[in-house]
Length: 180
Image 1 (cartoon, rainbow, N blue to C red):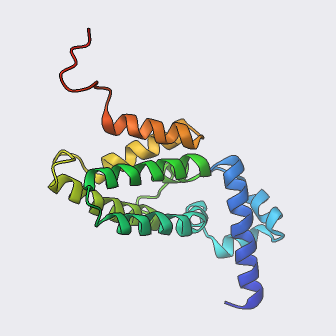
Image 2 (image 1 turned 90 degrees about the horizontal axis):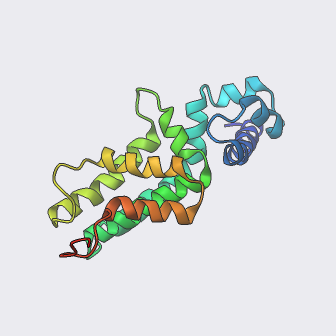
Image 3 (image 1 turned 90 degrees about the vertical axis):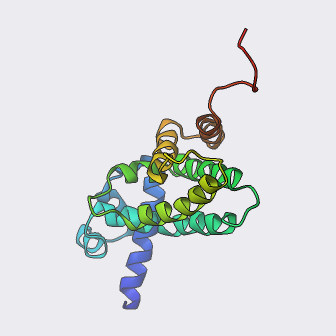
């Protein structure tokens, strides 16, 4: 990539990240181009679709989540490792305002970010299933849907973590509690 093309690419990504954080996944592409100091044609030359721009914005952050999943894949408590990773995913989605929405707009050809998350989370889930911490009929797509739903329902890290924990642990009280 030529130096000026690389500079334009980087400016578009920076402007897109800021605008998506403010406005979500349906942020104005024209505003992103304007904020980046480029024309609409330049934006579309680098990113032919909204989805390709969203994927580029989130790719590095998704890589961090996947690296964390790889670290957790050897944890002594696979169920706790999976739960922690799902909380991190929901918090990330809630606080970036765009990941959860971007996943809703995914094209039929599954996006790179979704594939990366599915693979990373799938490894953690299979370990947790083998340890008896997760039911055998649960699929990684189910868990990603829960984390995504929480991300869409809240924009606050604390609430996202609390709601994912509630979804994972359920509403049951201590064992043997009859409820009154």
